[in-house]
Amino acid sequence: MSVTPIVAELTDLVFQVAGRLSAEFNAAAAELDLPPAQALALSTLCEPVPMREMADRLHCDASNVTGIVDGLERRGLVTRQPAPHDRRVKHLVLTEEGARRRDLLLERSQAEAAELFAFPDADRRHLRDLLARVVDARA
Amino acid sequence: MSVTPIVAELTDLVFQVAGRLSAEFNAAAAELDLPPAQALALSTLCEPVPMREMADRLHCDASNVTGIVDGLERRGLVTRQPAPHDRRVKHLVLTEEGARRRDLLLERSQAEAAELFAFPDADRRHLRDLLARVVDARA
DNA sequence: CCACATACTTGAGAACCTCAATAATCAAGT
DNA sequence: ACTTGATTATTGAGGTTCTCAAGTATGTGG
Image (tube, rainbow over the protein chains, first blue to last red):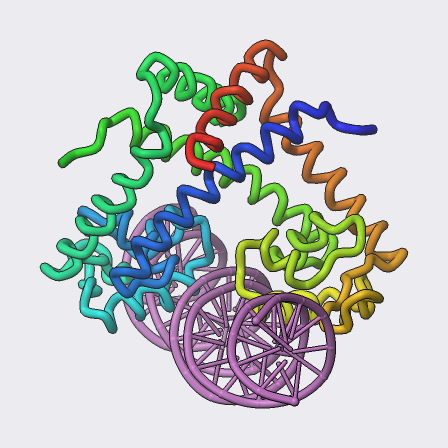
């Protein structure tokens, strides 16, 4: 029954790399007084976005987003604003401080990421192509 | 200060692949009535292992493991057994049912993983080598 | 024996998550 | 208009995961 060893190996490696990346992300987040999920939400926020859209981005339940945004709002980083065309939806909008915090977060976490991928550009592109193949293997 | 676009791209791809893998893992876990963290702990468990070692494997606080193992014990999948040589440490040992559940979990999640990495073997090995380079870039 | 480190637990508090149910609104068909 | 049915966001209950600070029991080295 056993799966090809290479598959287990690949799975493991992907988790290791992702693990480091997210450890670095979370560390950067923690320095900015942001819990992981809130940081993740913040990092995807640029243009105003409906709650529902955020739920999709985070691959989680809508009711979940309520709590996360509560946190971000309590910290004064986003506000909920009623959408003009549909009174059911509320848009998440970055405050000044929210935008500043978001930029810091991205800056720091990407700086760490850059170190992880610090090898010749040809290899990086090759890695990108292979990973891309995995991703849209079944899109 | 902007990071090379390729780095952002790589980061994104790695997260996407890891995201799918862990979504599949969590789904398999959910079918077996296992919360994510408990499933992860279970999946790493084969030989008896001290709590502390488990904490290292999960990259989390020791006090955290107590709660996770409480869950696994409540479900009857592991037991804590005092280690012979050091009375401070407790070994996590799989029960019969625990071993069975663990095998099912690995079987199912690896089957999903195999589909993700279903492309020529030469490419898979290449991908492995590149990822390995990332991992021990700073080990 | 003493000082110190280590393994595990406990407790408080926050964060995160699922699920079921609700209120408000929209979109369509009738 | 008016009902039906979907959709958006929230709430509440309950469980899981996390951090952090303290505490207990045990090992180790001077």
